[in-house]
Image 1 (cartoon, rainbow, N blue to C red):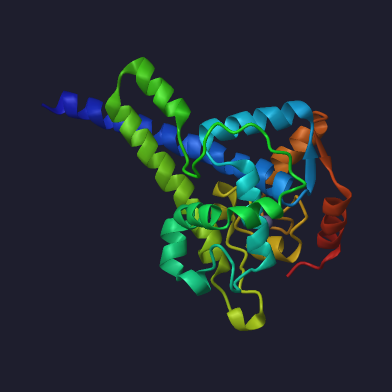
Image 2: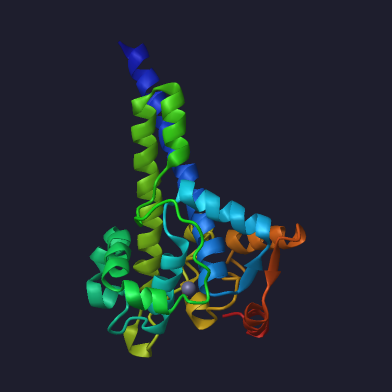
Length: 256
Ligand SMILES: [Zn+2]
């Protein structure tokens, strides 16, 4: 009796681990390519990196990069004011933490013209998906090859929980500070900082939005910045003047 059960447990564990890893790759692609690159123009990528990250975004995230960038630009322009697509102060903390993707999707549909207007500088690249929902094509491919529905179900569940959970932490918890100061964003700790690839150093980001580097103080490891530096060494990334000047300001700001 115990043998088959442990086999199922192993398949669930392997599926969940795979889903977690694909979600982490998806979070990395979102912050490096769609966020720091497309939305804020803090870094420009070479043709090979650009095409690779766009293609991988189809398979590991499923979002539409240009639409994501537009919604995100509107978020910065109207942060925690009327018109913010996902403010916890306007929508409620629980809704932003647990349903950020739903808010993105709804905003993209209801404000398609505004999103298009603020992204005229971003070329309309090829898009494989028309929805904002994350998908886990690699897990599905493995599932088809192995014909293991348990692995696939565990993988997709872990992918969704990880990706959507981190999105909720960034948009909800990292925005849930003292609104009376005018900027309620916070820098969360290094553990969630690593898993979010640096996205949860959110006070840093809202202070210097064009900087491609989000964590820069002691205790702010920033895997997204590390990936950009790797691409730069390979000749596939260039820190822009906008991003560079924001970064210089960061690096001369005393630690707090
Ligand atoms: Zn941003």
